[in-house]
Length: 61
Image 1 (cartoon, rainbow, N blue to C red):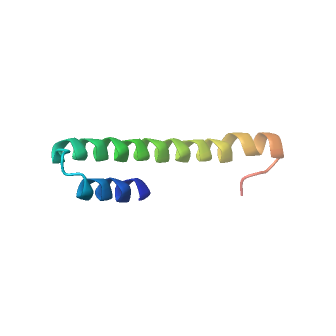
Image 2: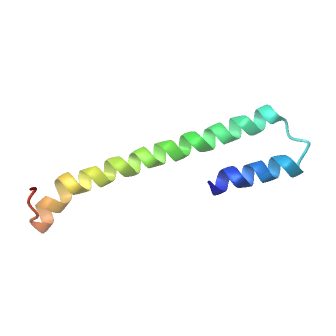
């Protein structure tokens, strides 16, 4: 959310940048966020399924 807000602020006060370039940068930032969120979700799932039961002796209900 902060990155999008900052990008919109810069767009408003910097007129020499084309809108298409700005939109490309925002798309790349959004894709990076999605990849990071999916990676974090997979890592959390793997931790709960494989690491925690093996090292901390926690059984599934």
